[in-house]
Length: 292
Image 1 (cartoon, one colour):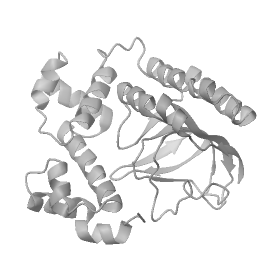
Image 2 (tube, rainbow, N blue to C red):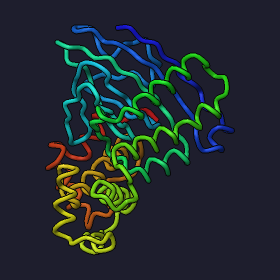
Image 3 (cartoon, one colour):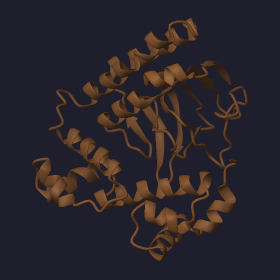
């Protein structure tokens, strides 16, 4: 594996500013190479069987080759021109195809402003893979930003971080030309953001569709076409992801988690979790508990 990368500690001043870059790099994994490479810091390294959860956003662009990307309940085949979008606190794992390998470039970023921009852009809070093979401006801007970070290192960290909104804006504009939130992708992205923000509440999807100016049946069709699932199932996917994160990283009881995530009863949550994950919530916590 060939890799050039930089990782940056983030200080409190940067966090207060609300926007910061955490890492950037590019790498090539040849067919048959071990993956991931142990050259990365411990908090970024992961084992395929356990996966990984980060505390930042990452854009990972596949420039050549292909591979597999998995989130909690979704599996994607990624190829040249695919953009892996990793949200904070989202369990994931990915690897290149052993026959083809892949070449990737990536950038990590975070902060309160980054979270607001990402939410407004409609990025899936449980992770996603987008086909951006035709988004030439975004790909060029991403490559230039990564190169600039690698060359300048810690110099001008604020002006470097300030390029992240331009990256997100470029992606929105190229994937949703003339996007004002009224195109079909724009409507779905707005709905995704709304559902994520109200995931623990009972969402009236018919009212949500009406507020966006389209019939409910049309809304359901467009949502399923864009995301591959229904609005309700999408909300449940978010609840499941958050439940798994809470089981791994907190001492909250099963009942407290069920209440926090808006389930009607602890029994219903336990039944739902068992059915989706194929193990009880208690067993999942024992197997995947993170050190505190």
